[in-house]
Image 1 (spheres, rainbow, N blue to C red):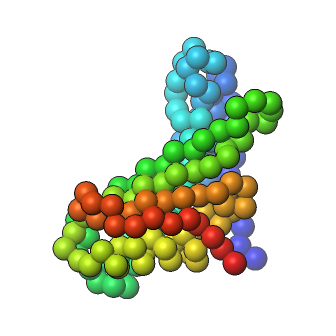
Image 2 (cartoon, rainbow, N blue to C red; image 1 turned 90 degrees about the horizontal axis):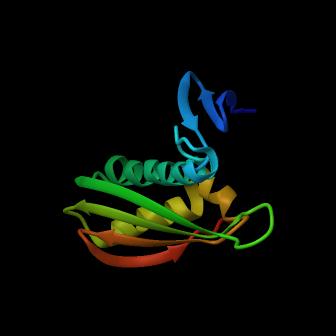
Length: 151
């Protein structure tokens, strides 16, 4: 069975340094809560992890499997939070995939759909808690939309 291990060490106030496999990242509360801002919040790290996980899938599919000339892949995600009570949780995530290159739009859509329905483990976990919707742009033009779903 494969396992993942991470640890954190308190730095100061609400700041922590996280570590996994020798790689380090700073985490902190937002500046209005902590008077300093040494890194992303834990939720921002999760959202960034979602983009990174899906991005690795999309680039692997487009460049290695489909052998396409991708010149740019940028992914952003916006999470909407519950408005009251604790814990404050995400109620929806909206992702935007911005791809550039000289290849068919259909292959860009296919790569993102495969990531959001089959390969992205972060998306699979998060989509159990809140819906994830996505938009795919190819060379600055919206070419499709969809939602993460894993069976």
